[in-house]
Length: 153
Image 1 (cartoon, helix red, strand yellow):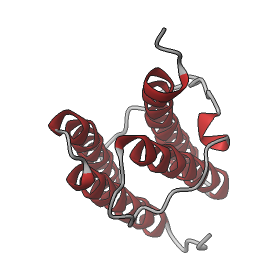
Image 2 (spheres, helix red, strand yellow):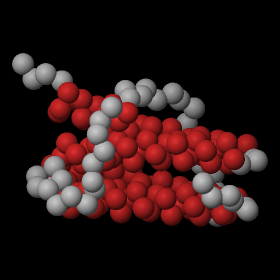
Image 3 (cartoon, helix red, strand yellow):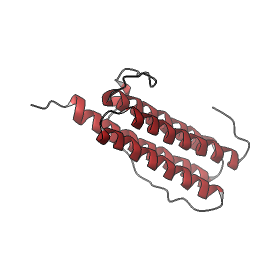
Image 4 (cartoon, one colour):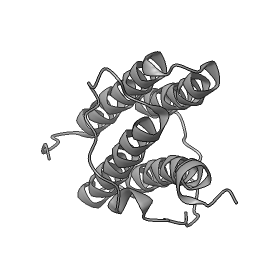
């Protein structure tokens, strides 16, 4: 991971990462054949823009409401196969797998960022962002479980 020379440097990195997440979810939305499936990814894209705006606000000197909560990890992302995000025939199941894995990576990124900063304010910010990503991962894991793992008998 990149070494940051300033708080702004770390925040800029996180802001770029959130924009990338937005673009990723819009890409997945565009590959879905059913509108209701596309909507799921469009909603996540909007949330990522919300994260970006919150980080930009902090960069301008604003506050960030941190969440001190534990988010359950179903660990489904640990046991599903890798998927090519550029596949032409990407279905909802495989898009969910991509999303789970991306959120897991984002959680790890923010956890590392939190461990690498010197101020308590930034540590809390990045820890809170990690929890936001963990919530996203959990929502994708629940969706995956409901649609692909749970027996529909």
